[in-house]
Length: 293
Image (cartoon, rainbow, N blue to C red; front, side, top):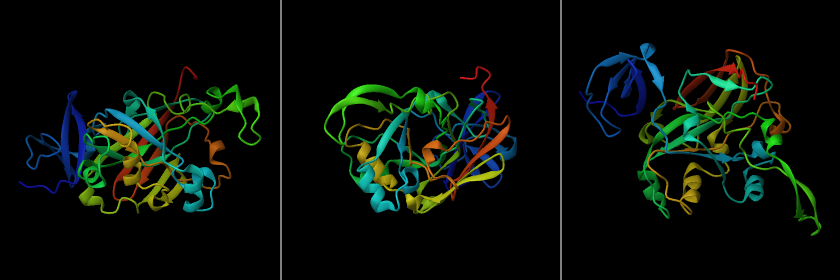
């Protein structure tokens, strides 16, 4: 039996992790991402327990990659502001699959719908053609954020003020750690869709919902730096290990004047949804953190 290899997913059966391909309402076991023949049983999609599609060796997230995320009027102005793609890392251990709960602080939470790119090993200095050949596929990634956390990573230091050249006490924003690198703050899935199925990945509708309300709406054509440009920038400096997960950056928030301040009140068992055209719909409930951290 031959299959059109478009959607790969991982799932659990009796606590055993399996890789499969989606065909209609059924998942068929396969050996690896190059398989064309099922090797085992078929399972109904509504009966399986989803796992993360692949165990990422690295999660590399792209910041402020649409005009709305920095308040710029268009992509030209945004590119002038940003200059080059900006990155931060999440630990692979914080990744969770479709349907698993997000452990959220009780005061605030927000989704950030993004396109996740799964790659094979890509060497430093790779060409655009080499990069394209080593993209396994695309997945929906939700860069969960706790907006108040950035304040805890901010600090004061004496630095030279670029506006007047004087050394003075300045507030430094700090790293994205307490607001983004938390257990369960990297949902992705439900599956990986191959490039042949997607076509132009830089022209896909992107939306997020929280507790039944539309929160974000945009398109990957709004990305200041395309997915190919993001990976080219990364490989100027590092070799990407096998099964890296690289995010695209997110779109803006409906009605938000300043996206850095945008947050939502955490609701127990509210469903957070990240949705990308041609890729899929990722759903995760929110559970209030009992430790209130």
